[in-house]
Length: 621
Image 1 (cartoon, rainbow, N blue to C red):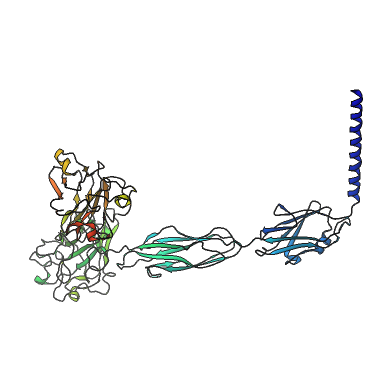
Image 2: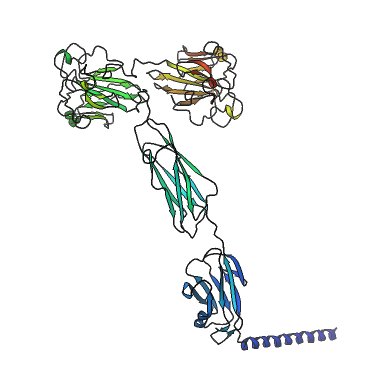
């Protein structure tokens, strides 16, 4: 055993001595070797061999040499194909044995480049590169970015609203990108809207830009109009799929009185500053001509909403300075849509004032000046609600001509002397200048508060999702559409609704919530249940308090009782719906709306099975 260990130890020592001898020989050889060698090459930190592909346009090329370099000699001998010596920089590291080459400008896409160093002495200590060195690489191909279009608001009012169009690149690129837009659609540029630009230029490194679409207010009834935005041409980028942005400009001009002009709101239509002398000046019709009591102002509510003047105050120019009103509108002074209101200076108005509501000033004298005056109405917060300045609205008109001034044509026209509009009369309080009644007013009661459409049988599948909540339900998608075709608000607070079965037990299917007030011209849609979602015209929308109105397709009676349990309204399928099949997967509706008899909805409009909140043709009431 000892002999074996002694042999083993001898062999081990012999091996160690051999290794030491070899190591010393290598060191001596390296110390005496005058050959300059390339030890490693990397691009952007990644090791490469004698060639590389898909290299970036801005590469950092690092070459590691075996010896410290003579920088002057190296830079004289180094060449970079396609680039002059001053087109790239060389940085040194590790005691000048490592160089990093950086082009000053981006290289070309998909191009082959070669870095060369001919044989020669480049080492600081005279070491020599014995073999020609070449390193080739190819830059990556150009992959153009994708251009996308977005808009932050696809529906804008024509009342000077705006939408932002966003043009985006999928990635930053080293080439300027130009995007030319193509504009089309029903709306007309520079008439209905303006665009901040139609060409987008994205400089190098920039990935987004915006275009502003600004609407232009006009006074034309034109309905909603669209603006279509597409890409016509792109430089240095692509459009993967055709895109068209659609922006809808909503028309805010309505014509509730069907006079062919947009509604003007609550306006002064006629003013009598100077009652004529004698009996001809008895404008209020009380048998006495008075220069103060026969003055009048004719207001018209040319809008689709009622106007509540309760507590508002009226002034002439002098009294506005002292805030002592000439007239205070009493509580309950509500002018309905299309309504006319005539305010006389005083007296006891008598006679035919058309459909107008008539009142006299609370002081008995509005003190309107024939020479120069301003009529001002302040709301109950002291803000100016309405004004009429003889120097502005009445510019160029003499107000002391023994007659009123009036708009011609009424409502939408400019002011003129009444005899210019109608040579046969000096004034026309409550009526148009030609003596006829206005379309609106308290006399025109329409057909009252009615049921206009009922869906007893929602169609099957998605087509039956009448309430738009994403789920078709035989009970929740039933609905009743009510319309207030009158000049007075209808308050349904606390009223109860029954089907035929539940009327017998007096267990309502629905109780109308407090505050359920339907204004003149208003629409109210009651669904069986669910969560109504979407556009229902201008209607108020609610769901039954029990979640099920239980309308029967075969024979039913809808009944509403008031708070004293008196019958307020009914709909009997055997009377109003005589001869109609209520199980036809569609609603029954009046044709024409409001005034006509009931029929199946597709008989009126084959394109729609129902139209809650709108007319049968899909337009608003």
